[in-house]
Amino acid sequence: MKLNNIHTKTVKNSRDLFLTLQKANEANSHIQTIILEPGKYFADEDNIVLSVKKNLTIKGKYSNAKATHLNCGFLLGDNNTLILKNLAIDYDGEECNTIALYDGAELYGDNIIVDRTTESHWDTIFCKDSTLSLKNSEVLTDPTRNICGISLKNSQIIATHSNLNAPLLDNSTAYLKDVFTNYAFALKNKSNLSFTDLTLDTSQNTEFSDFYVDNHSTVTGINLNLPKKYSYIDVINSHFENTNFASGLDNVRWRFDKNSTVLADGDEPFNNLA
Image (cartoon, rainbow, N blue to C red; front, side, top):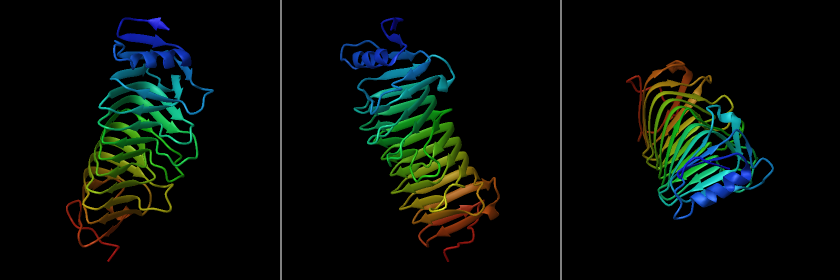
C-alpha cells in the first residue's frame, strides 16, 4: 500500500483496499481518496459488500474502466457521499444490490461500469431517499431478463452520456441527456422524467410495456428514439409529452386513459386503447 499524502492512499490488492476502507471509515481518519492500481479486486471472493460510512472517493488509476475490476457490492447511507471513477464493478452475491443507497446518500459515478453476474432478482443499483449522478457510465443487467439496472424510490438521478438498463422510478425524478436505455422504462407514483436525446431499445422485451407511465407521473422530452418496430407507450392517469421522434411517430403505439394528457409533436396521437 502506497502512502501518497494524509488524504490519499493508493492500493494494489484486495487486502489493501479492504483495510484502507476500514481505516477511512474511522471517525478520526483523514483519508478522502483511495486510488486503485489496475487489476482484479476480490476476484475469488463471494458476497463482499463494502460499507462506506464517510465521504469518500474511490477511483481507478487509469481512464480505462475495465482495467480496474471490483467483484463486490457497495452500501452507502447516513447522508454520506461516494464518488466512483474509472472502475468496473459487479457483484455475484445472491442477496444484495451491486450498489445500494439509503437515507440521504449521494453517489457520483464518472466512467464506471456497474453490473450483476447472478440470476437473482436484485436490481443492480437501488436508491431510496438518495441521489445518483452518472456521467459516461453504464449500469447493466442481463438484457433478456426483467431486472432493473436502476431502481429509485423517493430519489433523484441525473445522467449524461450513459447507458442504463431498464430504469424504474417510484416517486422519483430523473434528468437525462444523451442516454441509452434498454428493455423498458417505467415511472409510477408521482415520478418525473425530463430528457433530451433518449434512446429506448426494447427489442429484447416481448412481455411488458416498452414505456410505462402511471399514477400522476410526468414525462417531458426532446428527441425520443424507439428503434423497435411498434413500441408501446402506456400512460395511465399521467402526462406524457415529447417533441421529435427520431425513429418516426408511426413506429409508436399509444395506450392512454381519459385522465391522461399525451402530446406527440404537439398533437394528441391515435389512442390504441380506445
